[in-house]
Amino acid sequence: MRLFIEIEALSLEAWVGILPQEYQASQRLIVDCKAQVAPRHWPLQELEDSVSYAAVVETITEVVASQHWPLLEELIEALRQRLADDYPLLDTLELRLRKPDILEAVASVGISLQWQREGS
Image 1 (cartoon, rainbow, N blue to C red):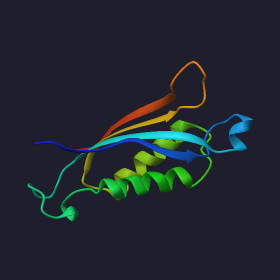
Image 2 (cartoon, helix red, strand yellow; image 1 turned 90 degrees about the vertical axis):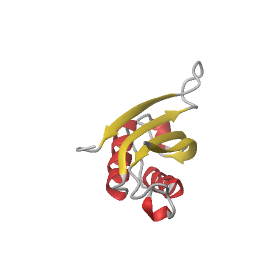
Image 3 (cartoon, helix red, strand yellow; image 1 turned 45 degrees about the horizontal axis):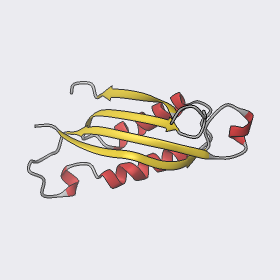
Image 4 (tube, rainbow, N blue to C red; image 1 turned 180 degrees about the vertical axis):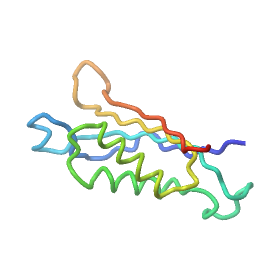
């Protein structure tokens, strides 16, 4: 049995980028997150036995808002590290960061990361 929590298209205002105009104004950032959870008990009866997707959204929002991120790569690693540290029941993590309003000819540009906890 594998249990996943999924967060699709979390839209945030972020200070991200290296261009001069990206230091002048925030821009929209879309975050997708899929995480495999190792629940303490199954079937779940208490939220404490798993990971709250609402808490994960709050953590992502907090990290994104914490500073200006020159590179998406810095931000995605900070998110990975914080989520792995804060939620020990996460076995795997897939993150995708997209900047939808950067290039006129494409819907969005971005990066993605896949991580697996050692021993999982």
